[in-house]
Image (cartoon, rainbow, N blue to C red; front, side, top):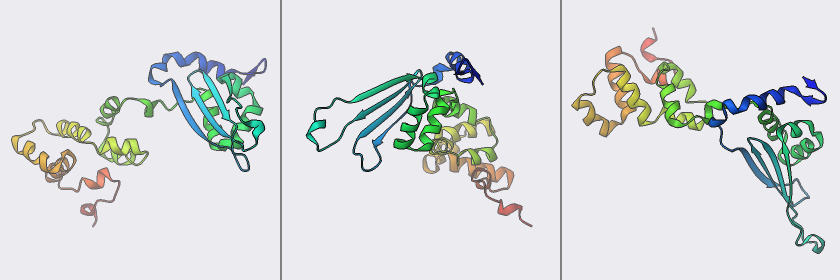
Length: 207
């Protein structure tokens, strides 16, 4: 929606942003690379909470460009969304996916979940069914690491079993929390817990 030539959705997203800004780093996205052939110029794109920053360095064997200082353009998110010339330049250098992601950030479409600290994510994960953990662990390398961490499986162990016995404490040193949980859970429920956490059919359930 546009009002007076301005993308109203971007204005509203910018106004709402302070409520969730504490979850965001100052730099939301950063990339750099060489321009398309035959250019040798080097470019950097930085998206902060307030600006789109575009920097470039002239790389040439021609003496006329020697000593040329780097260039820089800074625009607000609203200005970038309205500047199709700038968008085309970004598209040429970094491609349509980077342009699409930059526009998404400038319009206030942040991935807040992946920006949460590990401890908060672990607490959230601890409330989910084991079947969901299998799906979430496949969405990114960060979630795979969290879903397989000792800290997560210790929390899971404590939520399923009232007490961690001395025998469990001894076994965890050799097996780790995930394998220990699988062992006790499978004993209690007579099933293969790996099927739940790795999103695979349970052989025990086959006729």
